[in-house]
Amino acid sequence: MSVSENKAIFRRIVEVFNARNFQALDDLLAPAFVDHNLGPTQRPGIQGIKDAWVQFTTTYPDVKLRLEDIVAEDDKLATRVTLTSPKLVLNRMEFFRVADGKLVELWGITRREKVGNGQDP
Image (cartoon, rainbow, N blue to C red; front, side, top):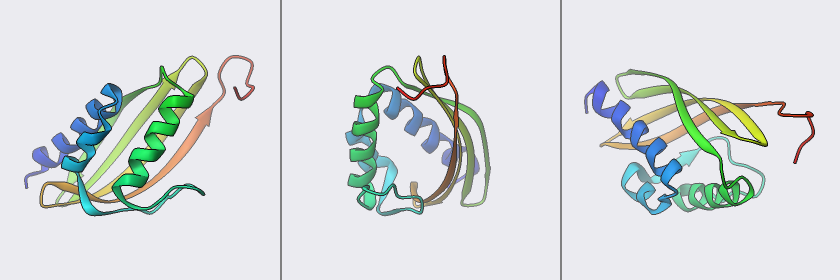
């Protein structure tokens, strides 16, 4: 796959998140997808991502994902995204490995911004 095709996969991820069309992840993530940053209760694999996204968007129903930057080389993607809602701002850096037109591995780090009075909701 070309670098531009790999970038398109992640742009589709952003669309899927914002539309809450989490079933579409089956077309974008490899069956053996590995998230190297699993949350304490997150299951591995695609279903773990779906479950985490459902829980997150239930807690923050108006959250939107915005792609700030994307860089690609060979089979790697680096992204900078912002998740925003009235009660939350998260900045996230993510690194992906792509194979056969799907995201295969994810590494990431998140920084939470203070919103409003700085109190967690």
